[in-house]
Length: 188
Image (cartoon, rainbow, N blue to C red; front, top):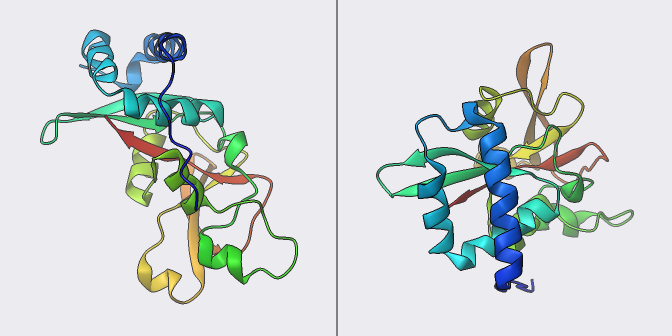
């Protein structure tokens, strides 16, 4: 797998930070007790992470700050697009699943794409936390980290929200659907 990571130009960094600031100000319920100036200072001190954030944005994930980890001194950015990011749909779960398909292969897998972007796929717990901040995946679904014991048997798990409830489902890891993608988390 190739690694396409690079740094953003000064103009690209400025544009991205402006987009993130506007989103931060538009959704204050996602980050109570967090001040934008502190977030911006952290972003400017980690230009290598800006590339990953930009990839989250480019694939229509609409990343936003959803928390702060006091132990690690890191801000947590999660994809907050209303539906599973458009630029990350129609993909199977992981490389093993992708390689197992003989026909009609998707272009990528959730785990591989997350690695290329430099983010982690959400866990079920992180996904459920995201749903406390709004209504997400009302029409789509998102792969989430699958426990090894399920993956070893060929399965993978995904979540969505229907009927005002977050549901956890299973599917063959090699399956893919136009309405299923994945959400990621980035620590900065």
